[in-house]
Image 1 (tube, rainbow, N blue to C red):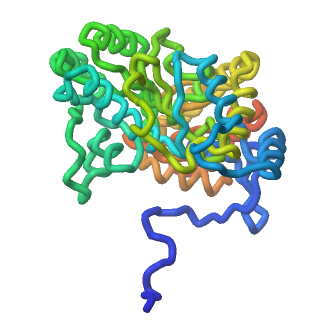
Image 2: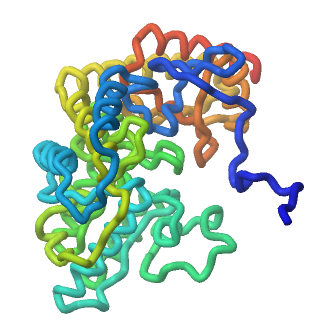
Image 3: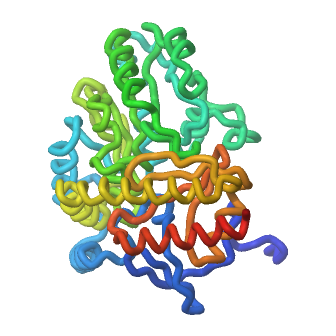
Length: 393
């Protein structure tokens, strides 16, 4: 007999009291008709905003043809998207998943398999950084290591060593020729919009080259044009051996991918990994259209300019409300407000102004607008943030 006191949906989310039924570009419309300016993009997912006409048309066309066959057969849409990702990245090969978490799982397996084939299966330790977020699976929470994610879920997957964020001495001490790989987000998202300086990314690349360790970038949140380049690591002029992407690549349709060099992926032969849904025709048709739009240099240039404009306006906002906002962080349209008041208070106050934002660690409010947001909409967002901060002052 069912327990009527327990909710039908597992209560693992503290949801805001809103129920949206429609979206238009940078706006979400509640079922009571209220319009909210959306600086969440579904936590960085809706890179092209809500109900983008080109994505709607692409999905509708594909839905009328073929939804799913499984990876027992060739999938032309998957081949097209893989070719586009290889063309526009460091990678030689791509494996498609449904999420960033699944992409992380393959990155870990690929690393372990690489060293197994190299005759050094004992070389399995992956260095990770405090404050990181790589998903919610057992491997992903083991890679992140924080008590908030791992408490009550032990024993964790072994083989991860967690280092303080930005501690170069700790990294130098830990990264020797016994380490299998280093995994890092070029910009921590859930961790509070904390960019890793370009010099650090270059140093990581050099250290991994020196020791033979693989370098893994997690660009699930900071990739796909979010910073004004297709991938955030491009600003530093370095490339990884393996990279996870998701969120923006599907524009709202569940899609992720693990990208890799031929060297890193050479041990992943037939039967070593698989997925039922990953890379299905629906997802890859949408992903191909997203890539077509986002890889346009003019589009990325607009993102970079809008990001710079928003950053400037937010710096002014912080100066006007020093008792509420301590500083501004981030790059492009992946920005954060480090708060002096509880970040959830600012999120709630902004929501009262019909503006949606995302809380993050380190008492930060994340601003992740659609990359298609207009300058006028950004100005309106800052006006609403100004009102929200004024209420909290």
